Amino acid sequence: MSTPPHTSAAPISTESSTVTDRLVKANTQYAAGFTDPGMDARPVLHVAVVACMDARLDLHAALGLELGDCHTIRNAGGVVTDDVIRSLTISQRALGTRSVMLVHHTNCGLESLTEDFRHELEDEVGQRPAWAVEAFRDVDQDVRQSMQRVRTSPFLLHTEDVRGFVFDVTTGLLREIDPATAAE
Image (cartoon, rainbow, N blue to C red; front, side):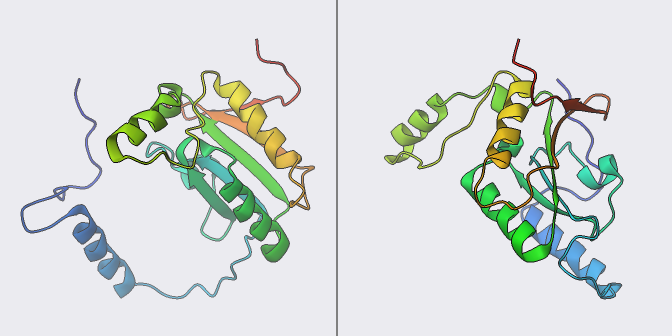
C-alpha cells in the first residue's frame, strides 16, 4: 500500500525539527503578510458546521466557504457530544448562528472501532476514559442520530434548520440524509 503524497515539500520531521516547528515557521511566514480583516466572531452565513476531524475533509473548499462564513466544530466522527452541544449553544446564543449542518463521511475510522477501544486504553494506562468512542456501523443512521441530538437539545434556540450529510471521500460529493428514513 503506497502512502499519498504530501502537499508540502518540507519534511515532516528531522532530528532538529518537528512537525510543530514546521507549522510555527509557516505561521511566521503567514503573519509577515497578515492584515487584520476586521471581522467579527459572528459567522456571516449564520451557520455552524459540525464535521469529522478526518484530514481528507477540506470543509471550506468542499462547501464553498470563505473565512468568516461559518463556525466549524470538528471531532472524531463529527459526533454530537456534550461538548459539541456546548459549542453550538455558544454559537447560537452568543454569536447569532441559526442553521446547523452535520457532515459525516464515507470510510470513517469510527466504523472500524468499537467500545473495546476504551477497555484496551484502560488496560494500558490503568484508567478508563470518561468518554464514549461513539463507534458506528451505519453512517446514515449515525447522521440521523446526530440530527436528533441537535434537534432535541434544550439548550439550542434554533433547531428548525438542522440538516445532515455524508461526504463521499472518493468523489467529493455530499449526500443528504433524510432524518425520517429508518435504517435498513
